[in-house]
Amino acid sequence: MAALNLSSWVRTKTDILRVVAMVLAVVFLLSHLKNSGKHKHKVRVDNVSESPAKVDPAVQSSVIKTELLVDPPARPVPKVEQEKLRRKPLSPAKVDPPAQPVHRKPKRRPWSPANPADFPNKTEFLMKHGFDLPPNDTCTLAIETWQDTYAVMHSEILRGIRPKRFAVAVVSEGGTGDQLTGLLTMFYYALLTGRAFQIMTYGFLPDYRMGYDAPFIDWFASYPDILFENIKNTFKGVREYSGERKPLFKHNTQAFTYWYLVNDGATQVFNRSDLRRVPNVNDSAPYAFVSSNRGRTFVLFNNPVHGPELRSLGLRAESMARCAFMFLFTPNAGTRRIALPFLSAVTDPTALRIGIQLRTGDNVFIHRDDHRVMVYAHFFDCAAQIEQDRRKPEHTKVIWYLASDSLSVRREAKNKYGEKLITNTHSPTVHTECVTHNASTCDRSVVRKAFQTAVAELYLLSRTQYHVLTHIGGFGQLAAWLSGEISHPHAYVLGHQPPPDPRPCSPEKAVSFQDLSMMWSGR
Image 1 (cartoon, rainbow, N blue to C red):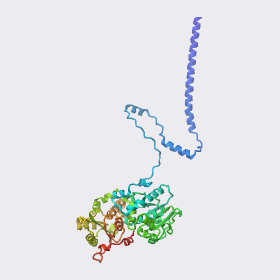
Image 2: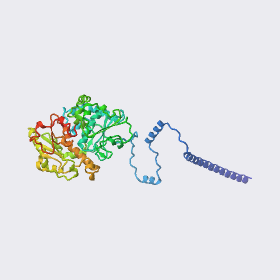
Image 3: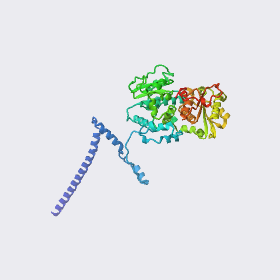
Image 4: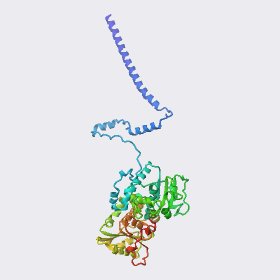
C-alpha cells in the first residue's frame, strides 16, 4: 500500500513539472510573438501609402530648422570595428562646440558697412594705400561729409532695407582711361539721384576686381546679359552701333530704364538739367542701366540744379573726379606688386616729379613695335623745360616717369636719359580689350595682367606733379586729374608733331582745368 502511494506521488510530481515546463514555454513563445508583432506592425504601417497630412507652413519651417540642428542617430558599430576599438587606445574625449544657427551661405562680396561706426578711419586707410590726403585736401573734407551717408544708403539698398534703386554702370568697350572716366561720371549720377552705384562688365572686358579693391561700398554687380544687351558698345553684331537701341526682350518699362552715353558726353544735360528728369530715362524705375566712356563731372559742378548740392558736400570742380575715384577704388595686391619697383621714386617728397604719357596708337598692339624715341623728342624737351622752370631749391633730384604703349620707345628713352628716367623696360603693353587687339593670345589671365598693369601705370603717373600728355586718349588726362594738384594748372598736351612754339611748356602755357575737362573723353 505504501509502495503504491509512493509510485502515484512520483507520477504526479512528474506531471506537475511537465505542466510547469509547458507553461513556461507558452509564456516564452507568447512574449517572442508579441515582440515580433510589434516590428511587423511598424513595418506594415510605414509601408502603407497614405495621403500626406496638411502641415502648417510655419510649423513645417520650424521642424526643418530644428532637424538641421539635431545630430543624426548614432550608427550601430559593426563587430569588426568594435574589435579595432578594443585594440586601439582611445584619445581624450572632444567636446563638441554648441550648435550654431544654420544660415544660407551668402555670395562672396567685398565688405559693405552697415553704419558709419563700422568704417575704418577712411583718411588713414587711403593714405596707407598711397593717396596723399593732407588735412586741407578737398577730398579729406568730402570724406568727412557725404561719403558715410551715401555708403549707408548704398548698403541698405543692397540688403533690402530700402526699396530697390540701382544705377548699374555697364563698362564700355575701349581703353581703361575712357572706361574709368565714364564710371566716375555715372557715380555722380547715382549719388545725385539716390541710387546704389554698381559696376559690371561682360565678355572679355576686365572685371574691375582684377585690379581694384572696393574699400567703402560694394560696387560689383552681375546681371543676365539680356537685361543690358542694348547698351553694349557692340550691339546687333555692329561695333559702335548708331541705330535705335531698344531692349531685345519685352521689358517692363516701369522696372528697367536705359541711358546710353558711349561717345556722347551729353554735355548740355550734365551742365543744365536735373538728372532726375532726363528725357527717356524713367527716374522711378528700380534699375537704371547706364553706359558711358565720357566724363562730365567738371561741367556738372556748374549745373544750376546740382551744383549747389555738390558745393555743400565740400567738393570742388577740380577735385570731383579724384574724390569719387578714391571712394570707389584702391589698387589691389596684384596691382601694387606691379607698381612697387617704381613707387618710391614717384612718391619721393624731395624730388621734382614729372610724368610723361606717350601714346603711339593702337597699331602698336597689332603690328610690329618699331617706334623710335627721336620721333617723340618734343615730349622729353617739354619735360626738360618744366624741370628748368619748376625746380626749387628743396628739390634734391628730378624724376621723369614714362608711361607708353610702345616698349621700343621706353627702352630707347631709358638708354638716352639714364637714371633720371624710370619706366618699365621689360614688358610689352597688352590692351585690356585684348579680344579686339590681341585676339590670338587673349584669355582671362592675359586680361587680368593687362588690366593690373594699366591700373598700376595710371596710379604711378598720378603720383607725379607735372604731366606731359598725348593729345589722343584719356589715360594720361585722367592721371593728371587724380594727382590732386589743383592749386595751379600742371598739364601740357602735345600732338605727335613737334609744336611750332619753341617753348610750349613754360608755366603760363599749362592747359587750364576748364580746357582740360573738355579734351578727348573729358572729365
